[in-house]
Image 1 (cartoon, rainbow, N blue to C red):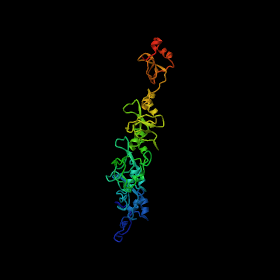
Image 2 (cartoon, helix red, strand yellow):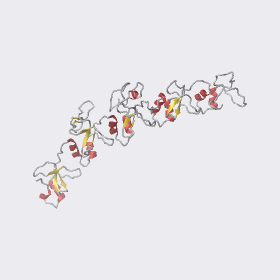
Image 3 (cartoon, rainbow, N blue to C red):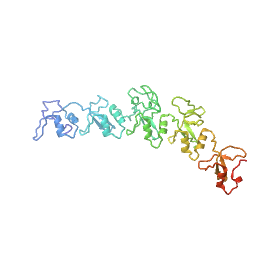
Image 4 (tube, rainbow, N blue to C red):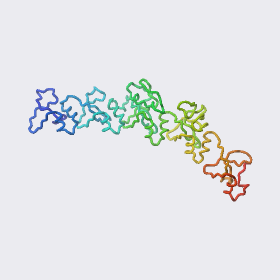
Length: 380
């Protein structure tokens, strides 16, 4: 047949009033007839979905309950009576529209650039996650600057019974380890509004997976900024990069889950390695590099004198080796120590590049043009 009805029944329309399948009696010769609408659809319209073909032929009088894409809504719609279910949007306008058995299959085939959970949720609920009245997905996503991760919801709003965040529970996993959110709770501070970009990628309850997608920010840094939970790691002091500080809130006492405890004055009082005395700071930025130990922080940021960095960070003084090295600014041999006193050969701690000698005579061989009395530095 022509129009939107692919197959019709050979019958008199006047005597079959109300029968949508009836297309009138066939008056032309050469028209092929079929025993059933199923045979007509499969033989004459083999490229069409057989259920949609039968339904649009008017022979079944029922909807297919299959899914098809609606590119205008960035979602999939269900072939069922409008109003009977939030997902129902009636039959597609085009009989050649591909049909799918589930919203998931439709989203995967036709809207693969949209996060699958977002597509399936908006398809089955009929609520576009970008609508102004949408509660959002409740999942982690990148912020607008792609420098940390935020939750797709509006902070301070009241959680409703069917809001997606109740199923997602994005703050239950570590490092936040917060109690489960429930209806009538307020949306958490990690919410940054409902994003209007339907192609945004969401990461369910995993802030770590979200942070891994931001390749210019260290994962640990991103997780800490995103969740507000300090890492208890170490980083270069922004005000003096020759030493390192601990990423911890001053005044944090030792207890369960606390590996770096800090006094109210802001100094570390206990840590897995000997980091006692290191200053605690809670604020970091996306370009902060975090290290698991004080020693690794110093080696990475003050590699020419990491030992001094460790002591500077702790507020202690390195003892020195008491060996000798050439101070080329003086053209004399000095001792690797900081003891002040008349007659001492100590001047300052040797740098990483300084060659150390076990005794003054061995060092003075490097300054062979000087006499022994002039070669060795003596404090006055």
